[in-house]
Length: 195
Image 1: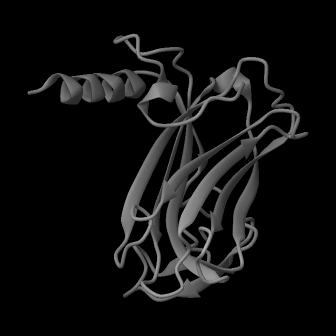
Image 2: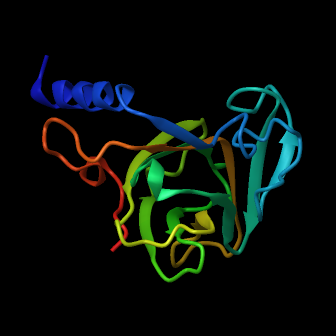
């Protein structure tokens, strides 16, 4: 077993040994759209089609010149500063969005982080693809109210003006671990840090 695989396994073993708080998933805040409605998500429409959905009976579709699929959710830093965001995404071959940015803000937007995580060719796909990112909040951020997470789709320059994208099974989990045994900060495993 190579060193990278060993580090990743050790990372998830440490996570499993500590507390976790689901913030968004199938059962909490409609992460899989299985209610049949978009609420509490903004800028997305829910479609029922079990043959097309990544799993279950429903998926979300967003389209336009650009799109900001977002949700406000309660969070407490008493549960830790480390998060794993994951989701399934798919775009059509024609008129699909070509870029995706994740933006995460505290309740009054005094602190936020933005990271373009996907662009062509990673986002362009005719099948569902799974994406997962480790996020770390600064210890100074204000979490006394609802926070906001956004999946912002857009078109790269030179592309046709409108686009579409599909989302399913969005998950955000908060962990109370301060570090992993390898000494690698969670944010270095593929995410962003609020500063």
